[in-house]
Length: 69
Picture 1 (cartoon, one colour):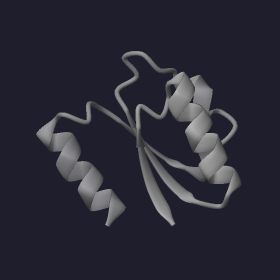
Picture 2: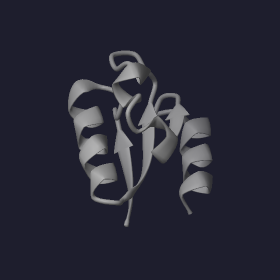
Picture 3: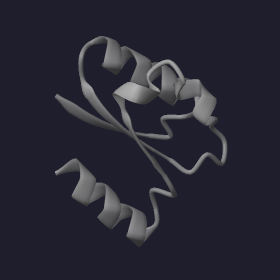
């Protein structure tokens, strides 16, 4: 199963990402790092795809859609 976690570098998002990875899921994290920290993903960084940017940006939306499909 594939998941997209917006705000995945924040406290709640990163814990969600950790659990999804632990369960064997494929995870794409979308975060502009305005509140979260990339260090929160350090334990799973090599097991996820991380895209830095705002989820409200049209460019970001197109980039994410391309990478997810």
